Image (cartoon, rainbow, N blue to C red; front, side, top):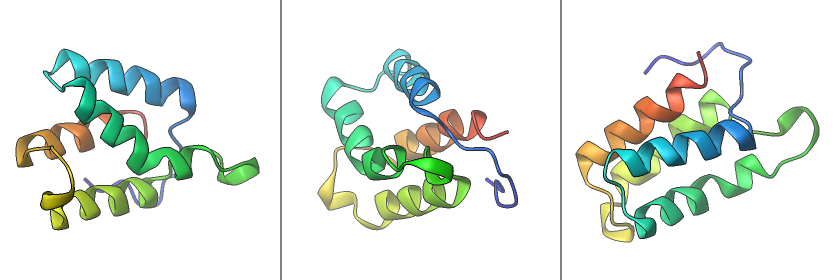
Length: 90
C-alpha cells in the first residue's frame, strides 16, 4: 500500500481502534489476538520507535502472506488488515 516515506506511526490507541474495526469486519476473537501478537513487539517499543511504523506494518503483512499455515487469517482478511491499519498511517 505505499506507506513508505511517512514518519507516522500507529500508536496503542489507534491500534485498539483498528482492532475494533476488524471485529466489525467479521474477524473472530482468535484472529484479533493473532494480529495483536504479530504487532505487539513493534507497538511496545519505547521512545521514538514506539508504535507501528509503515515498514513494520509491511513486514507483518508480508509474514502473514508467507506463513498462512501459522495463523487463521484468510487472504481477504490480510488485505482488510493492511487497509485498516494503513488508514492510521496516512
